[in-house]
Length: 102
Length: 172
Image (cartoon, rainbow over all chains, first blue to last red; front, side):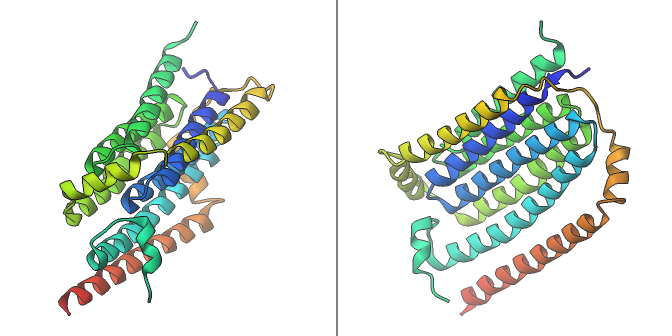
């Protein structure tokens, strides 16, 4: 059924990663920075699955599951930090975080 | 002549890329999250055509279902208004986006060049069954599964602690 070249899967992963990187550098909203990190992790996962299904081994998909777990953990702690910070300062500007003490 | 799976892969990939571009350029956070959901669903289709049905289902259930819902809850608790939207528009206006876009485009061109130049014409023709993945997870990757469970436990405890700290502060 599937005869997609592996290079196409890797390129899709690379494009998603680059878009996430651009978003990470471009946005000053902390929420959108977290979203961009999610996009980058997703791109890395696509590359893992592409490489794994090239050799028909389950390892690529296993790595995707680990990336999923890491993303879930990162988002839960990141959003908790973001909400704490927003309650304190009433802003999501990433540039104002440098004034945080203690 | 492209076959059906290839057409589905390219269509899903195009949708994913366009939705991701829209997601990282929206000024309203909820719109960005909705485009992120579209992007994740398109990536799930691409993963399915690449021969990874279990991972495609998990992409929908966990990424689009759980993680983005967490983001939506956070946006609901933030009470962002028209003022924040205006500030966001100011941040995105001007020339601030040129540098990041050029840098990541350069990196992307390098990656694509390296992938295309490699003279391997391999296709993703094999499907790893969910049973194989389960056997791998509880066989050679057992330590990794345990570490992931501990990571998630740590994340739960950390998120709870941070939530409690902000509530304590609000009460004072």
